[in-house]
Length: 290
Ligand code: C2E
Ligand code: MG
Ligand code: MG
Ligand code: MG
Image 1: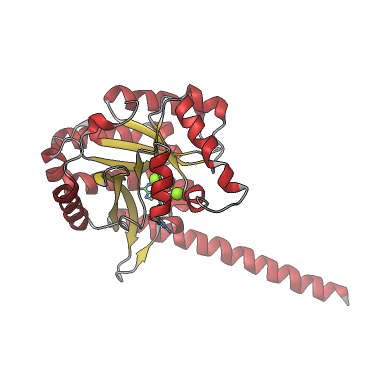
Image 2: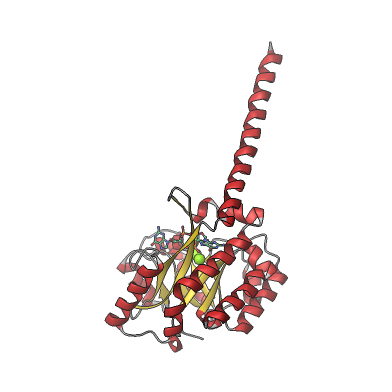
């Protein structure tokens, strides 16, 4: 009696595998045509100088706007894009969009910057960097107005990454580690990488003011940054209590819903102008240790 049951189970598992493979390959097909049709849009989340409230720039965050108008968040397609190599043309499209949408304001205010997320593949190949140079060169944007954020990743080949980061630095870009504290970047590698900044992951900002074991990690993150002479950007700032804590500990910059959610380019320019009128212009010389 067990044979038919085993056969039935085998059929079920087989079916599940086939449909998983099919849905993965159809998801890949959809993503591939999204790249061809240039269905990506970029939102800009303002970055604030915490002590003054001035807007220093924004982080560019990609979204996939499907033909029906629905928005797919990056968490739902970046890993497939990375696994399939589609991240390379997606990075190029993000560059095209931010240059087209923001070159006016970036040329008008040399202290303003845009921070861009790069994946391990972008860093390993250095491909996006060449494209970036061409595009910003044409638009009259300076290299020091484009900052790069790199997620700590287990799969990045450290020597190739270091080489690309050195080229970025030589060209004048600022380089930061994204989601610091959540990845695999060993302290050993950290001190040997050409870095300007750490972006402290939201999970650590969330713990500020809570008496948990995790909240006791924050001072050590700041010690590491100070020891390596890196400035910090706090991610996911949502309360004034968090701002007070961060300012007291010399964390220069922050972004989060307390200030603004990611905005369209028009929304960001309006936000930036409003902050400039209210708090005055931001001057780049203020970056600690830079
Ligand atoms: P990330 O680089 O760490 O970006 C910060 C994420 O936190 C963004 O999510 C942002 O919307 C969200 N966030 C910021 N402040 C708050 C807050 O106060 N509360 C909450 N709940 N969330 C906040 P988003 O836009 O969904 O992006 C998710 C991740 O996707 C990014 O994390 C980044 O790793 C990746 N990503 C986004 N755009 C790109 C891109 O152009 N290229 C690559 N390779 N990855 C990207
Ligand atoms: Mg980021
Ligand atoms: Mg981050
Ligand atoms: Mg994050």
